[in-house]
Amino acid sequence: MRAIRRPTRRAVLLAGAVGVPMLAGCAAPVVTTREAERDPVRRENLGDELTLIASYRAALTARPDLATTLTPIMAAHEDHARALAAGLPDPTSAMPSAAPSEGTDVVATLREAERAGLTMRTSSVNRASEGDLAALLSWISSSEAQHVALLGMLP
Figure 1 (cartoon, rainbow, N blue to C red):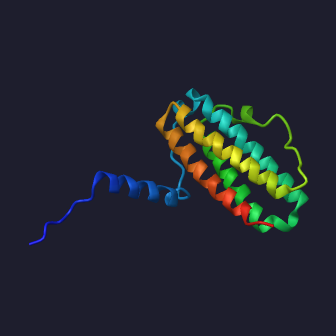
Figure 2: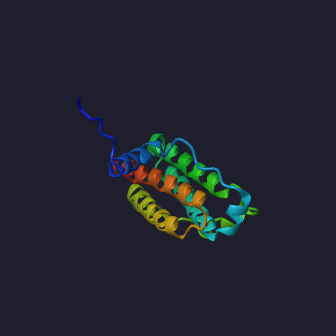
């Protein structure tokens, strides 16, 4: 008779690491108002998301031919911003202070902005004081990694 092998801890962790990014687009973690008010990391990342949205709006004005690709990405950033703003007493205080600069290569500019956002979100996970915010930032960073890949396929 052959013994049934139980999965090792390493196998379970690896499966989770592979599976979580695939589920990243399903739903944002729920955050309470009390948690949102205590963590300035939320405001920083909200401001960056709002800047990204402004960059996509400017890009759509400059390159309306890319609307099919850029509009859904911009909508994802709007979802990110709503999730980050949830529970903040004054989410408008995170509004970007300057308009995004317009580059000659709109796609390259967006790709670089997405990479910078991905880096910010990834480092912010370690600075988040609440687990739900860290989970939210992880969800957003996995989405932004997909945006970088999509933008890399554009002409």
